[in-house]
Image 1 (tube, rainbow, N blue to C red):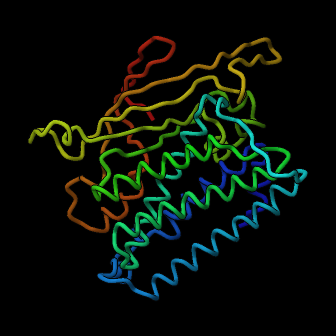
Image 2 (cartoon, one colour; image 1 turned 30 degrees about the vertical axis):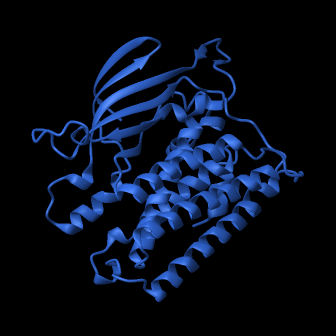
Length: 316
C-alpha cells in the first residue's frame, strides 16, 4: 500500500486527524487480540516476558515509523519554524476536539487490552495504555509545532487528555466503562460544495467532513435505575454534531452561485446497544462484535437544531 499517496491526498487536513484515525484502525485490525480464538490470544495469568517484549517492540516500531512517514510525506511540504503554538480551539465548532477525545478513548482501550494480554496487572495495563496513547498524540502535536502551516495546539492536548482519562479513570478505579464514547458517520450533502476541504471521496469525507460525524456519550440506564426490567445491554446516548460547517473559523459560507450556508450546532438523544452485554454464548461472535462497539447503532433519535426538535426513525 502506498501510504505516501494516502497522506498526500489528504494534505489539506491537519496531520493529527489522519494519524489518530489510522492508529485506531491499526490497533483494532492489526494489533487487537479479539479477532482470534487460538489459545495464543488468551491473556496470560502472569507477566509473559516474550509477549511484553514483543508488544513494546511493536509499539516502538509503529510509533517511530509513523512519525518518520509523517515527516517525509507531510511536513517536508511546508517550511520548518521554531516551536510555536496555534490556537484552534474555536475552529469547526469543536468537532475536531471531539474526534481527538474519541481517538484517545478508543486507543487507550485497545492498548490496555493488549497489555492485559501480556499478563500485566490490570491497573498497570491501564496506566501503560493511556500513557502511551497520550504520548503518541503529543509527539504529533510537537511536529505540528515545528511547521509553519500549523502549530502546537493546547486545545488538542486537552481533548486528547480528556478522552484518555475518560477511559483510564473508569477502568483503573472500577474496572469497567460506565460511560462509553462512540462515533457515527453518514455522508453529508456538503462534500461536493468544498471537496478540497471536506473531501472528494468517501474515505476523505469520513476524515474531513465534520457535518457527517456525530460523537456520542452513552451510559446504561440499568446502572442508574436498578430495575430488573431494564436490559443490561440497553444504552441511553447523547450526541453532538454540526450542520453546514464549511469553513473552520467562520460560520457562514457563500458559494459562487450566491447561496449562503449558515453553520449550526446539533444535539441528539437516542438509544444504543452495548454489544458486549448481549446474551451471546459463542465467544468468537462476541470477539467480532467487541471492536464494533465503538460505533453507535442506528436507532430512533431526537435531534435539536436551531431550537427545533426533529424525530428520526433511524439516525446514524
